[in-house]
Length: 333
Image 1 (cartoon, rainbow, N blue to C red):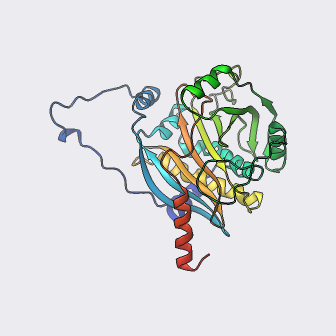
Image 2 (image 1 turned 90 degrees about the vertical axis):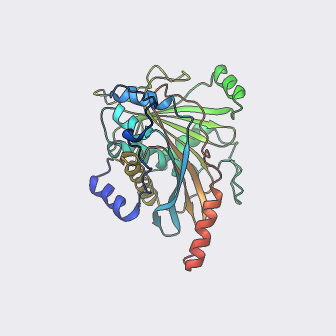
Image 3 (image 1 turned 30 degrees about the vertical axis):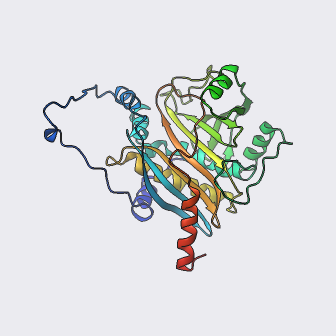
């Protein structure tokens, strides 16, 4: 399910207004004693150099609704500026533009919508009405039910993965939530999208992290074979961290439309040369209540099954409230 260029163009012009580009630096204006780090133009070298500086993070506030259907909205709250890593990952995966890989992001967002219909997370966002996780149901069986409930989703197998003692020790050492469930979806596809593998990790705080490695060259498969039980494997790709809240009232077709719009907008920002976007963060909502919060994360080296939090730029509940206030003032509630 590849997004067409006309769809991306429509979103870029009518639904997405890009924020003002960051100021650029003219090398000629730098002091004479400034040291310039000249590196190879090889995409992988450039991306690895960028990762060395990833501790530097700038959260640019967008607070922009991408798509609206009835009382449901898909909103991007932040883009994390820093290294243009999202675009670098797409280039490293074979010189692709992110619009060509956005089906992977769309598939992941659709999974977040599907998950929100079956369980809820527990990040303390201060929002009322959170549903509890049904601990009486086997978790893997719940995902089988989730995947089979969608007419558009297909997959070849769903397999549990072990959680190693090293992973648990690392989580404790870094004061991270412990993983409670881990599994792999092999041959995942939505409609006619290319098949790819997904590793999902669910944590004790209610967050889920989807690991979406990119296709390997001519093989047409993702590079997870033989690496399922490893903490990390060398492969570029993306992660989508999400925490669910309330069931969306949208039909499956409309949820897919929302996921497509979110992925198309992500690609517009990732491919735009004036933005150095790394992460893409926001939420989906229905009637001013969050369905889920999400964070799209690029990875290029040591792509691993480690924990990633959704909320690295501050609480997003306030933006949900602001949207509600704005809609009330316009009489659109």
